[in-house]
Image 1 (cartoon, rainbow, N blue to C red):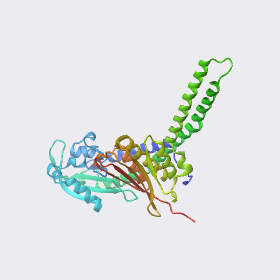
Image 2: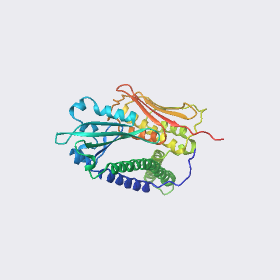
Image 3: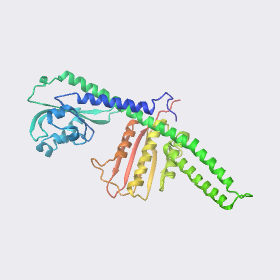
Image 4: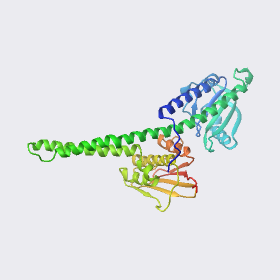
Length: 376
């Protein structure tokens, strides 16, 4: 279950490249004037700001980033759900072009030509929307940013967005490699040193001529503390990087996870079946399971937690984590960073992640993962 051994960029290099990409992206977006440029996430929340928003509608960065794109619609259109309809149309047909009035920060309304374009990743998953707005009563060619320049900038933004997504995927891999290095250092170095010290202290704690009983007792106590430290270091090592995943595969690593966490977790897997998946895919799936189990332990107040891994076809398997806890309201803005990370990891491996939950009805997290085709 090993991937290609091609050299991968280090954690620091990926972080530096991502920072450079972020700077280029910001400069591109903020440099466009007279056009209000909105970048929205799949739920319609504004993620970027450009100077054109301030010039056209008067809003500063802190006014709009993190808010719904509906905030610039007038009261009548908001009441009619115009923003939601616009995004649905853009998602279905690729773009939505409308003319309506937007609300300036000072409360006045301006006639606006508005284009919303849906953005998809190479696997066809919706990653957000790009919105471009300009005043209808001002000719487009009156702006120093001509239509051609705007189109060029938007194309560059799309390229930069794809570059950033690739870097984010590389960053996940680089982080895991750092965790693996730290985990191995803890297991192979620190744990061994502590274990050696514990053995020495046990030897010192044995009765010996000329040694006071109190000194032997202190040596015995220190040995016990060192033994506890060895256990803690090894548990931390397994948490940082699951060695079992590399040596025995995903099912064994999930079974170990079920026994390692401080709660009774059941793991179900048909032992007669075999998985043929890449190491990086297995690692992302393991992290999804780890996050889902951790969420259930911390938040659900569940009495039972179950991990299930099933083959559903020659090309797909499904990981399910379910609990009988208190659940939660699965609505807009209810997904925390942990759930977002799980969805992102599923997308990176070419899979999907869905969550079913409701107050008082527990939670089910399902991740569909790809299976490699066996080669003869």
